Length: 131
Image (cartoon, rainbow, N blue to C red):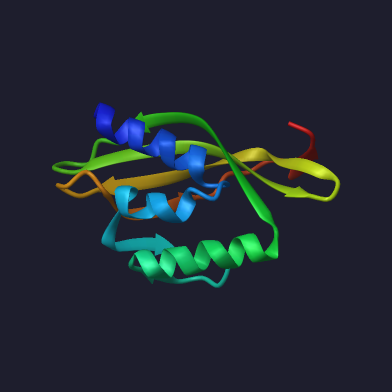
């Protein structure tokens, strides 16, 4: 796996739940990024649409994403990295984490920025209290 893409993704997951998130977008997402809309279905296109989507997510609650692993996915001629993550939410009762993991699949452009992200659903028992 290219070290630059691994470092970028690790940093992206570190800043996702912080105030640095919006400022980091131009350093990780291509201007015309293609992103899944997990709230409404369909796809989002462009940095502004992804920022607005994340704002909606944080207005509804405080989503958490814990990176649990990275691996390359060998598609011919493309840099693709699969990130295994555990999803959660922070609410008044504390942090609650999903029992299952999902995969975030990132495709990178020639400039090293994310041009597309997809989600592969996992299976498991649901949300657990604590970490």
